[in-house]
Image 1 (tube, rainbow, N blue to C red):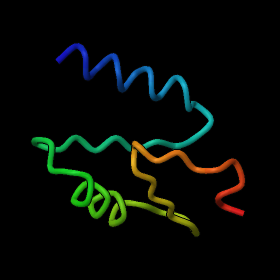
Image 2 (cartoon, rainbow, N blue to C red):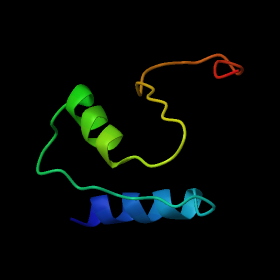
Image 3 (spheres, one colour):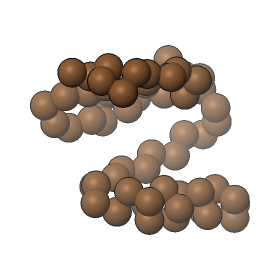
Image 4 (cartoon, rainbow, N blue to C red):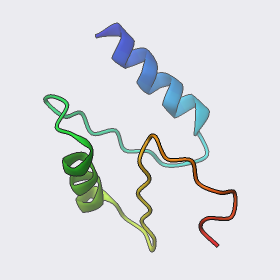
Length: 62
């Protein structure tokens, strides 16, 4: 799928300073399931989930 490939390449190029793991799902499983899968795969001290249609204030994580 060329569109998906271009999107992933763009994502990796835009955030090159981070180690990204791209996990392809068989279909759109929804926001909650995708967050659960991402949470299980996440590594690190902190995990923040933000809905794609949210508009956080600049200092929302402080």
